[in-house]
Amino acid sequence: MAEEHTVQALSWRRLYLSRAKLKAASRTSALLSGFAMVAMVEVQLQKGDDSIDDVPEGLFISFSVVTTILVAVHLFALMISTCILPNIEAVSNVHNITAVNESPHEHMRVFIEVAWCFSTGLGIFLFLVEIAVLMWVKFYQYSTWAAIISTGILVPTLILFVAFAVHFYRTLVVHKYERSAQGLMELENMATQLKDNGPRVEDV
Image 1: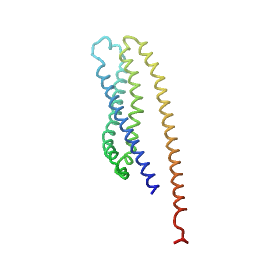
Image 2: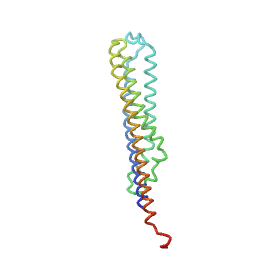
Image 3: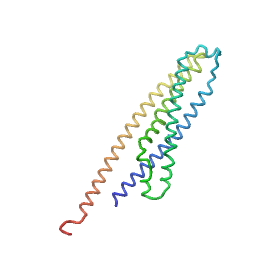
Image 4: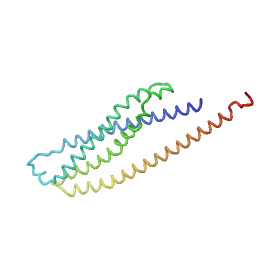
């Protein structure tokens, strides 16, 4: 009975963690995709304008490609969150220890991780890259130094972001491994105690 409660508690913990990840992915994706769309719309590009005639076409291509991928990644994460989150929310509001078995968070775990990584990892990285490209598109004709300085600020930021992401995921993997090992040890101890406390053959 105690072993069953331990398994159920672990399932509820994974459910709440999945719900938190989907909520974070939903908020982040909606916010950053909205900012990306506003940035694309607010860029004033008119054919024949002297301020953009000398801007290399490669910058426009880079800006359009990065913005499109950025919006697509965030909308994909938002779609996953929107589809899965209501089912998890419905189960998490039920005050029944066995209700966790009705939640799709275990079967959809891969999609939940993809949505979280796309939104908080790849999506933020692309957003920073888009800022750098946008600075070149906006300031190339007016002040090349402004674009260079902004890029110089963003490059260390991107390096720190990647380093933190790698360190965070490695730490998270180590933590999950330690928790899993500890859980297995607890289950083995409980199984040993149940075996030792069970009825003996000579007592039957």
